[in-house]
Length: 107
Image (tube, rainbow, N blue to C red; front, side, top):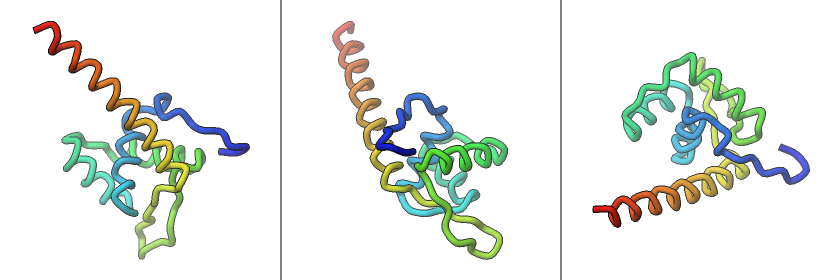
């Protein structure tokens, strides 16, 4: 990202959001990201999906690779990635709250 642009996470697919949430808990390599997502979201992000998402998030400046640990390449959330994730989660929380309120009003 350049010139102060702010990326709208709403335009990213759900696997990208799940990867960012995983990395918000600290740096991880691919398999650790997959395991973490499986534990908190109950979904399996396959290797093909994961290894397509990581370079895209890196190009957007939302994550960055760290020094290799043997064969593994860990990634971490950047400051811009954390800010974008925070905004997207707040937006989704507001949307979920509104939807739940409206469902409660109908019952």
